[in-house]
Image (tube, rainbow, N blue to C red):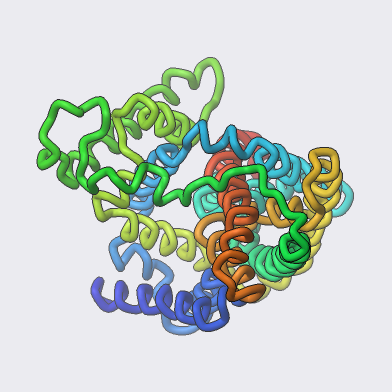
Length: 406
């Protein structure tokens, strides 16, 4: 199979996943469709190394991870998070609920490695799933390497419909109070992640630290260079800390991305502005589906039961804890649970599901504005905290505790 034909096949699969997701309004996750098609391909006519043949080798995927995680760090805005402090507490509480229930269930029914590999993908996205999958593979745990990917692929089936139900119930409650003249919103809505840098700034405006340089010098290569420099620093510091404490360079990429953006060394979302974000995500998606080339039908049957049990346990755990914490903070059960559920998908699914719920509830512009202000900001911040930040940190820490196969 030629490189370009291999690339064509795998990109067609990614597009078909998007197509089904759009047509079903995200009720059937695109990652599920892609995973099924890749499995069918591997079990029929795909070469086992089709992703590498297409050009996405492991070393390329690692490079993309450094760039993407550093880019994630630039999204953090401390003032926005301060305004949503209740959301942050609920999101962290939901993660604690997932960790507690998954650990208990794994110790009773499975084993410690299963708990370690399962938790980060359950509270995160593609990056944490890849970190845990690679860690399990390096430890000789082939089943768990595939299991991390399956958890990432399947959790949306629980997260999407439950979130839609919770948001519609919360929206109806808010509308009833608003129509009776009893509604008073006290928390200002946070801007969308992609608008957080300020709409007034030009696409190629220099970040603050380089403010004296003309904007036309801020080319795509200059953005890539600064991203690569921050990623390189994370790699170096991780190596320096290794004799004292094991810290994943990916965790440091996230931290250094936050610092670099705060200092004005990086702008918000430099990878998007360098027109490299779409390719980076495509490369990582292909790399994560490449893991499925080791999945046999027998393995999938073995993993089906623990996968369903652990996803159900995670949902129960986050519901109980988020409900209790939400009650203490004066947040409704529906809103608290919806915030906690964002850990199962993150952005942009949280944005899409919230807007679809609002559209289904009312066509009145003023009512839509009230619902948007009330629900969208917490959903975005909840997804950012769990998927973008905490899951990467958890994966970077927990991957070091995997016990290698004997």
